[in-house]
Amino acid sequence: MTASRAALLYAAGLTLLYALIPSLTFPGPPLDVVEGFAWGREMQLGYTKHPPMQAWLLEATRHLTGGTYVGGYWLSALSAAIGYLFIWKICRHLGLSAWQGFWSIVLTSVTFYFTLPMPEFNPNILQIPVWTGMILLFLRVLETRRLADWLLLGALAAFGLYTKYFVFLLIGTIGLYVLVFRDARRVLATPGPWLGALTGLVFLVPHILWLLDTDFLTLQYAASRSKPAASIVGHLWNPLNFLLAQVGNHAGIFLVMIAGFGWLGLKTFRSGWNRSFLRASAHEDRFLLWFAFVPLLVVLLASAVTGNEFEHMWGTPMFVLSGVVAVRFAALPVLWPYPRRALAAAIAIQVIFLSVIFGQAVLEPYWKQKQTRIHYPARAVAEEMARIWKEDQNSELAYVAGDMWSAANVTLHAPGRPSMFYLHSRTLSPWIDIGDVQDKGLMIVWRGDRDRPLREFLELYPDAVRQGSRTFDYLSDAEIPQVTVNWLIIPPGKVAEAPVN
Image (cartoon, rainbow, N blue to C red):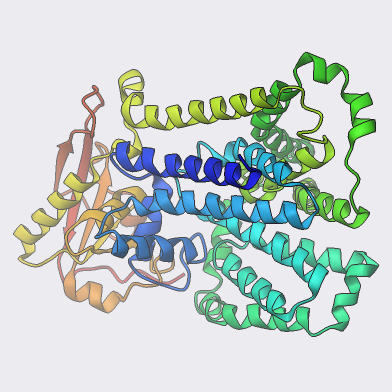
C-alpha cells in the first residue's frame, strides 16, 4: 500500500468514527454545541463569548440535516479531516517523504485534542483547519510568492478571526517570522502581503462594525473570564501549569514513539540518529520549529508577565505540527525497529478514546448515577414549556430567558425555535428587540428546587416566584435523579425594560 493511500484510509476512517459514534449514541449534544445552535438561530455578526463562525456553521447544518443537531459532530470530524489534509501537504512542502507524512498524521491524531474533545464542536476545534491552512499557505507564499496564495491567506486569516480571536497569535507569529528573517523580509517588497492583509481587513469590516456597535462585547466577556494571579506565585505557576497540561496532551505521541522504538530502538537511538537523521534545508527546519514552538512561548510569556491563567483547551490549534516535529527530528519512521507496533499503539489509543466516547453515552449514567448534559431531556422540557406557554397565552412561545443551559435547550428544541434572551440582558443578547419582546411576552426558565429565579432576574422582577415546575426523567434507563424545571410567564406589556450596560 502506498503512503498516500494509507494516510487517506487512516484519516478518513478515524474521522468517520469520531462523527458516527456520537451521532448514533449521544442522546443530546454537549454544552458548546447547544450554545452554538442557540446563537446561530439569530445569525448575528458576533455573540456573547465568541465571533460568529461556529454558530453560523452549526445553523447551516441544522438546515442541511432537516432540523437535527448531529451536524456538530460532523463539523468536528470535518475540521480534523481538513487539518490532516493540510498536515500532509505541509510535510510534502517541507521535503518530508510520503511515509513521514503518514506518520505525521498518525502522531498528531493521538494528541488529546484530536480525540476525546471531538464531539464538542467549538471555536477551538474549528481553529484546527484554520491554523494548518494558514501555515501551509504561508509556507507556499515563501516558496512561490504567488499573489493568489497571499489573497487566500488573508481570507483564511479573516475566517479564523471570525472563529476565535486566538488566531491573532498565529497572525503575529507569521508577522514576526517575516520581520526576523532576512530571506522572508523580501516579501515585504512585493504587493502580496499588503493585498493579503487588505483582503482580510475587508472581510473583517462587518465584524469590526459589530464590535463597535456592541461596545466590544466579546472582548468584555474575555476580560471578565480572565483569571489573574493572586500572588507572585501565580506568575510562575500559571504558565507552568499550562505547559504541563500541554505535555500531558502529547502523552499519546510519546506512547506511540516508545512502542515503535522498543527497548532495542531506545538503546541504539543516539548512534542511529547521528547516522540516519535526514538532512533538509535549514530554512525548512527553521520554519517548522518556529511555528511549532513560538506560539507556545508567547502564551507562556504572556501568562508569566500578566499572571493570567490560560484555559488548557486553548492549546488545541497550537500543536497541529507536533506530529511533524516528532517525525522530522526523531528521524521517523527510519529509526523505528517496530513500526507495526507503533501503528498498533496508535490504533489502540484511538480505540480507547472512541470507547470512552461511547461509554459517556451508554455506560456512564449507570456508574456515575448523576445528571449529565448529553442525557438532559431537552426536547421534552422544551416541548412542555412551549405547551404551557400556549395554554396560558394562546400564542406561540417567542422568547425564553434563563441561564445558558436552561434557555438554550428550549431555543434548540421548542416548536418555532424561540429566541434566547440570555440572562434577560440586552447587553449579552444584542439581537433582542425589547419592543418585540414587550409585544409577545417572555418565559423565564430555571432548573433546581429554588422557588425564585436567578439573581439577574430578581434584580428586574424583585417579587418574582416560580409559576410552576415539572420534573423530567433523564434520557437513560439508569437511576439518574430527575431534573426539576421551573418557569415564570411574563405576559406582553409586563416585560421589564432591561438596561443595556
